[in-house]
Length: 128
Image 1 (tube, rainbow, N blue to C red):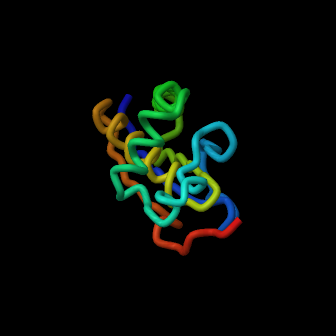
Image 2: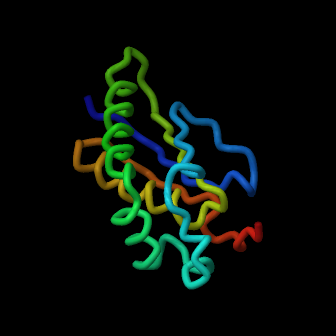
């Protein structure tokens, strides 16, 4: 069953996670472009960041598929309404928005109506 889905990418270091039906924490198990000085000030809008997150991070593809499956489960429930998926990384500029964009593409291909919001993409780089 197709559903309306809202995806919110965010950074845990900026504020509390948004309220969501499903929250994906990308901080600890997936490669962080922030640790590479040449990528630190780039964002998910830049091809090198997308390549590192998607092509060079084991497990990301499986997590994307699992998230699509989870959304399908929420959509098959008896209650109508928008399903909210929040995905977060440390600063919200790299992993989370890349994941959100690919997730949106997969969900749209599955027939869902999808909106995407990148809460922290344009915020300054968090210095750790």
